[in-house]
Length: 227
Image 1 (spheres, rainbow, N blue to C red):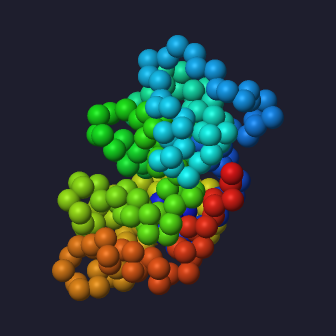
Image 2: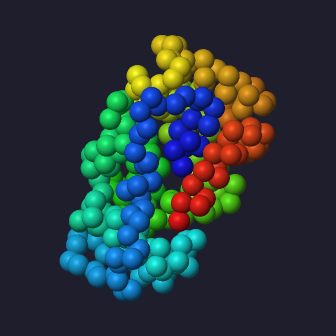
């Protein structure tokens, strides 16, 4: 998830110290410890029936139980607001500033744009990122970069996301990044993606460009076997 959403997989950088996997809080590997039926304690928000979510996602009921247990452990109220989301996400990038990237990522999860993410929002997005088709994953990623939700990605939006990614990675990268690296990265990719040179990238242009890039296509498979 992080590779395709964050860097188009072309930021050829490695952290000197391995960071914790951002998927860790998404999926808690405690299957042997979880009861057959999920205990629903009193919270401010209860998710839809697991049968309904099972029909709407690519997860089994058992997997949804595991996901909900992990989600509830981090968010006892049943919903997560942006500040809590930022605090959780920052744990995985201790050497950088993940606040802006977490902001953009939260907005992509918050499909209702009401300032909170419910378990249903979370699991629907995760289903796409982990188990969706290539087109579904790329469409979701396009939505992340389309900050103002006008159906296009302009160079400023791409710059905002890429700059947030560089800030999140921090100084512990190899090789050491130059100060103007984000802008250079955006110039290369925007020129490649804006095929008709009209100053914006459409969904079709985005999907076509990503499918032409082997690094991006490999990144889409990164988490397919996480569950």
